[in-house]
Image (cartoon, rainbow, N blue to C red; front, side, top):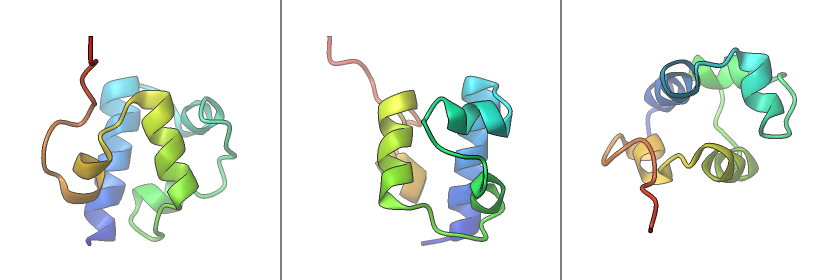
Length: 78
């Protein structure tokens, strides 16, 4: 597991998919801004709660987030 690559994918979701600044990105997830910068820089490991909340809020494919494989977002099952 490469924390730098995970951080880059978190940043990609925030900047390229949502287009949100750090503060708003985490506020929509119901979280504080305190560690998003460290996560994006690959300096800390995202918690299970962060990953779950990111998946629920933004439909992020967690397999992609952790491995880089597959699509960034989950597809609707409609």
